[in-house]
Figure 1 (tube, helix red, strand yellow):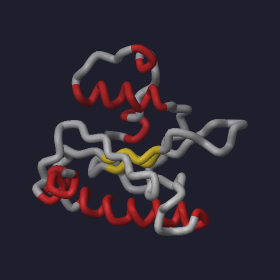
Figure 2 (figure 1 turned 60 degrees about the vertical axis):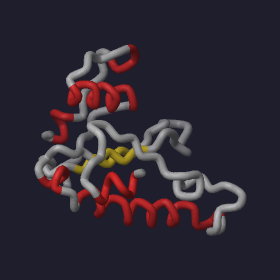
Figure 3 (figure 1 turned 120 degrees about the horizontal axis):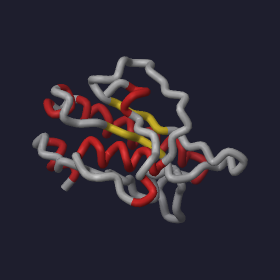
Figure 4 (figure 1 turned 30 degrees about the horizontal axis):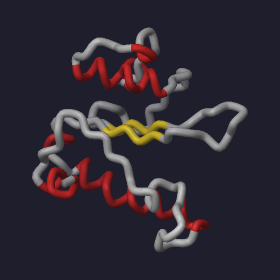
Length: 133
């Protein structure tokens, strides 16, 4: 359904896209590429998807925001995970050094959609001021 929705520029108001276990940089026995290629395989998957989404009219008119993030870190001392936010409203190269977390990302999504912030998202910083969207 994802391919159809992207091709028709008909993604729902909120879409959560998760790659399969061969493309999510974890690797799984039976994946066609070797485990040593798991990062490159995930990069290739994203390199195909992101241009398709940024080519959509809904992206170009500012109705679509792309957030690429991970759910864990291999650096257990900091547990920092990257988040890449793509929008026509964000000046290319903008960075935000604020200490955000996944609850802040959830809260930002709730703000954008006009929902009240629930549970762990309440009181967390928004990504919007630092990134200008």
